[in-house]
Length: 261
Image (cartoon, rainbow, N blue to C red):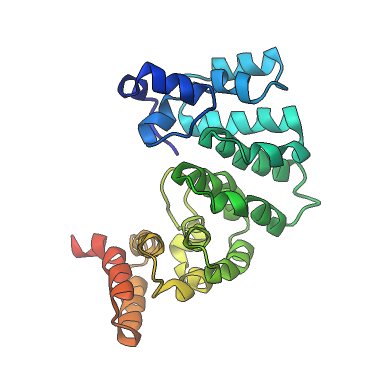
């Protein structure tokens, strides 16, 4: 999340902050997540990390949270290796589990020539289905750069995720491929050719989960900023086929920016 480095710790009690920094509990909201001191938590949750790594984490304290997550993922991977990530993926701290998302992305980056994208996606899938809202966001944000480099392949792989029983997994397939998205780089190919996303979008056009509906609507709202006519036509076609509440909700969100003009 490209969130500002706000003094969110001011809204978190010292006792609560001690639990968060000690890796004992998960954050209950964004303010708590932003208040976590990465170096303090890392010293507890990652005893394998050497002094230099912890010093590097402390030196990055003033950076935005996305940059600190990226750095933390690299430190975690260096400290425990690919095999050590499984244990950390079950850590009580959502921040630590978020670090694992980035560690997996770093591992893929280092071995991309020998590892197909589907292995990265499958590795991050349990974290995409995590019970904590923050971990689910870090999961797609961590792999988004790799999806952006191979968008057609990623969409073909993620199309199968749209049939998953978990609304969280279905939502990941949609959220991770948004043309513009939030706190992430845009994907020019999808801004100009949003029809490439139909293998993911079509199966979700009447999804029963509002969590998924909102993501699909936001995907199309992204596309509407560069290809408004395409989005209008798609929504008209969907509504003609199914005027149910789910499709109507998706299309309302999809067309909201156009409706303001």
